[in-house]
Image 1 (cartoon, rainbow, N blue to C red):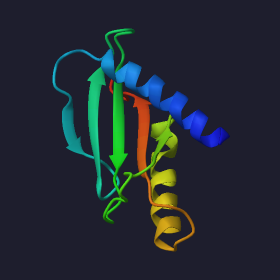
Image 2 (image 1 turned 30 degrees about the vertical axis):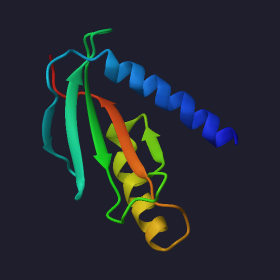
Image 3 (image 1 turned 135 degrees about the horizontal axis):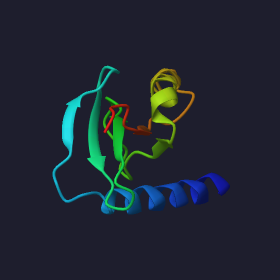
Length: 109
């Protein structure tokens, strides 16, 4: 139960940040991890550019949809969490989930 409350809180924070993003379309590009996507946006709140990587499981989603795991230090941890989720769900040890990594842009302004 505590995990679901924390997930809801993190989801709300992420949605608020994305909603505050500049109204321009995000730039999509190939992410560094296979079967994942990447996009960037500039926050209207602090003017910083953020990079978001998303890994969606290859399996058919459950009726209620996939759960989402947010990784807030995406630069350092997205690949680790995405691969761990892919391996553990493939072994049937955990439920498949979408992994979202959020990081500040590594490009200078």
